[in-house]
Structures are given as C-alpha cells and as structure tokens.
Length: 340
Image 1: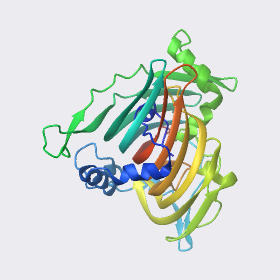
Image 2 (image 1 turned 90 degrees about the vertical axis):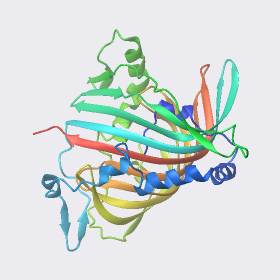
Image 3 (image 1 turned 90 degrees about the horizontal axis):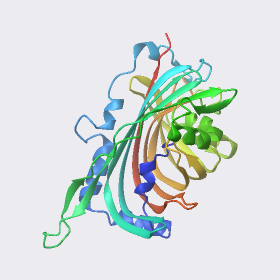
Image 4 (image 1 turned 180 degrees about the horizontal axis):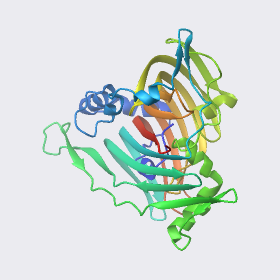
C-alpha cells in the first residue's frame, strides 16, 4: 500500500465523517474530476505520466522466469530475494477538500484541491539502505476571484520544497542505525525508525512480504479475499480489515511481469512510519482500484486507488495534522535487482 510520506499529512483533508468526505469529493470541480480520470485511465500526457510505466513490454529475461501453464499462473515466492536492489518510487495524488493542522500557535484550516507528486530513490546493498527524497511540490487549484461566478479555477504551483540530504542506514547486530552518527538528523531518524525499519523495507519493496500466495495457479477472473492474519501480504504492519481481489489480466511494470488485480476493501493501521520519521494513523476505504503484484517475488509494484481516508499524525507538543477526504493515488515502484 502507498508509503507514508510527510507531504501526505500536510495536505490531509479534514471533516467529521466518511459521509462528509464523500460529500466533499462529490462537490469537486469538473476540471479536477476530468484530470483525475485522465491520470487513472492513462490519457494524461507528458513525460511525468505514471501510466507510462506499464506501457513497455516485459523484459524477456524476467518473462522466462514466469511459471505459467494451461492450468494457470503461479505467483512465485521460491526465487531468492535480491540482496542488492534499487527502487525508484513515484507517488502521485489527486485530492480535494480541507486540511486542518494544530500547533502551539493554534489551529489552521484551509481548502485544498490539487495534485501532489513525490519521488524517492532507495538503494539496498545487504545490510545497508540509502534513502533520498527528491524535490517535490504541490500543484493547487485556486478560485479565480475575477470570474463572475467565482467557479473558474487556475493552477498555482507551489515552489518545490528542498529535500533533506540523503540518509544511509546500516544494520549491525540485528539493529538498524544511521551510518553517519555525527549527523543529528540521521541519528534521530535511526532512533525512531529502528524498531519499525523492517516494516519500512517491506512497504517500499526492499524486502519480501512475509506472506504471499499459496501454491495455487490463478486464472483470469479468479477472486480471493485477504483478511485477518493474511493482511501482511498487502499491508505492512499491524492492520485490521479486508480486501477483495479479482485477477483481471497480466502486464508488466517497468518490464517486470505482474498480475493485475481489481481491488476494493477497507482497513485501519496505527503508527505507520515513513523514512522522514513521521508516524501516522489511518482509516482507509478503497472504493475501487488496481494492484500490480509481481509474478516473481512477493512485492507490489504498482497501485491505482480511489480512496476515502481518515488520517492523523503528529502531536506530543509538535505540529499535528488531522484530516479526512478523497485521495486518488497512483504509486509506481521501478524495481531493479542489481545482482549479476
């Protein structure tokens, strides 16, 4: 499921109930809806279109590893998981609604309709992980005050926020820590993230999911329900809820062969970490969406989700964010083994 990044909570959408959130989503402008549809259907143009990740054919060398017969296709989990790999993760969100943030200076609420794109680069070499956040910004729709009906909108692109320097983590004696212990930020991150670092690796495709498919060959149209003790195959950490999956097709993500599942469901998680040291509670309803699950390793390489979210982050004397609303999410993990 989508990784937790600090920018997500800065634009969390606030209201009191899922009914209010659905009402907010229904009132979104037609132009926002049209762009959301374009992104999710692949009509959006330009080099930043995340749908392009699924346009390329499967890598022939990887396709040879697919276990597919007349009886169906097996989602493999027997291949040794790479110890050296690189993941380029792109998270794109379309949203509309309101956000609320609290701090020592009081509460601040604001309306927000826009698109946010976040990119991170992750490299793993055995017991060493390097994390780098690329500059990211928010393209927001703002009302045109000069328009007679005040319904017209214009795009206002926020200046990209400069990212913090990359951080390298190293595992020593079963504990993850910062490689540069003299860097205060890195040391603080390592202290907070060490207990949950394995969860971060799973969520970002740097480690194998602990549960995957049984030795069952799937055919197009087959359905399954994932819930209870089987949730870790889709959601890292301690989650409650259920998902309904239906295998619709097979297709690659950046050349990596995958099974494409339609997905719907709902789940809750608490204290979800991200690489910036933020922890988030969330309640998510997936109204519709698709998941691209690797046919070779227990990893999720792409997600397209239409969701209603309730999120809460921060507090304990610092800035807190709370919100609820509609998120249209596209996550792509360009996953590459660096082993010979």
